[in-house]
Length: 439
Picture 1 (cartoon, helix red, strand yellow):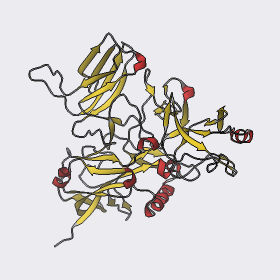
Picture 2 (tube, one colour):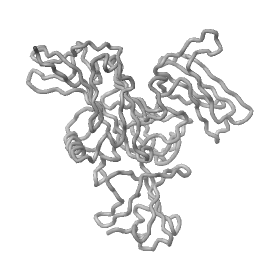
Picture 3 (cartoon, one colour):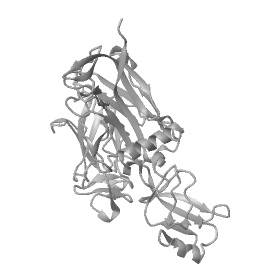
């Protein structure tokens, strides 16, 4: 009787820069491949970083796993999928084929539920979106990311490329957009054309609002009270720009929200045609102004408002680095004809850390020495207040402001934030036990 052999189909790793930023302020994603691997091994072996801190991960439908004889196991960084295989020799390579055929229509979905009370405060995700979407990550149609750190190599993020700016859309502070030749982050709430409100940064294929797209077929779309909207037109189109349904709402007074019912094409019909789950575009036009386009994934089964999002791994992604099997049905993991092991695909979800303006409060006026010593980093709008000139990242490893090797300024004690006007702030209170200047 032969041995039963199991091999890994794929792996998902969740990488959060709040927990992984270095003590000198270097982002985890600025490290080269070997440095990243070493840091993850150090952090996980000492229980300093674990997916368990951040998310509960669970299969959306366990029966799909069992029916297709696929094993699911959580890891410190995320989870792995495995299956029983037959071992064959193919052109001098050792290849692995699932013992039980996995149909191309199979999709394996896993929910992500945040365990952190301050998750949105420490993670660069949307705080006040116009619709109640959750995040959708998939291997379907994604593109390799070319890393520019260390020896050239590619990685497999499950997030989409960042979107380009749209006229008429307002972006929260921290938003990441692709401006064509440059990649930028908003340093305050702004539109996409006011360039002084954006700073150039490196694209790291972080999760962005391009991934904030999973919705039920019925949902409320919220409108800005400042716009005094009296007419809303919402057009649902398929990805080929074919119109599926149009909803129009008018009012003599301001419209604050509109119910978008995309469950059926015409609910008034005696036998209405249902709108299938899938990827769509919704085009929103208010007061006959320029429209704003959102890409959505409508799926009642996958959507759960209490979850951060869903990972959807699909076997119908073929002939790409994101495929779970090759075109002959073999696993990607193999031993090549030189004896080198080729690993299973490792997909990543990359979460950026929140940035905020650090704001220092003091009951008594700040001294002239304190103001002068911090003037390179902080503005002094009032005698009792100092505010960072630029946003600074929130990190688990304390990365204070620093002048050379002498001046260390206090950091926020907790990752709670305040939104005031167009900016996000972290408040720090200066007193006898928490002095401003630490040499």
